[in-house]
Length: 198
Image 1 (tube, rainbow, N blue to C red):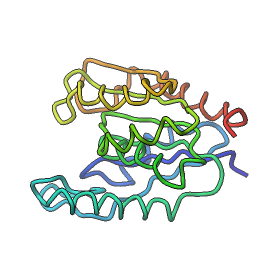
Image 2 (image 1 turned 45 degrees about the horizontal axis):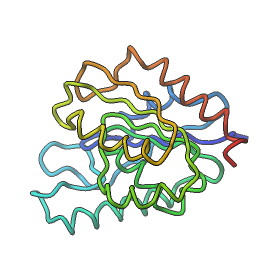
Image 3 (image 1 turned 45 degrees about the vertical axis):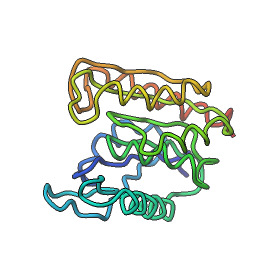
Image 4 (image 1 turned 120 degrees about the vertical axis):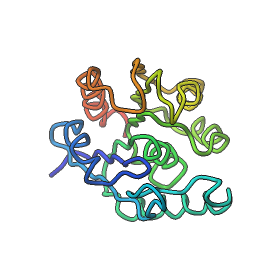
């Protein structure tokens, strides 16, 4: 029987298949891997999105799409402890899950090249939750999610007293493989702390 599940979500225009290789390499020993697939087809760039950004649609539609995507992910989450994470838009989904009924099962987060989609809600939610470890990775040259925007996201956790390990790098909107092993160790540490978190 698996000890828990690492749930990793792809970014905008990504697929679950593209996320799977990275996720499997991050998955702690004895844990299973789940890479949900977004259902909104990106209208111009192919691949899938958890929601479309304002400009393509209204802010209200955008948030409705996000809520729908969160509901769909909640339906497929397994029982037992989960570490949630994702790349770019998938990372925003991961932190948004803290505001759902899944929050009690979440024992850690892995946030890569991402930002918060709903900062006010996140600020209002996490002070009332038991702190869990967060592994955060972001590049100085990220042109899609600027570093200062990424820092704003992770500072919400730090200000609430959550233990954060930062992996900043000099590259762009990507996973920095030079820090991958350290991040993998961090995720394994989250899994090892499950008994303490429950």
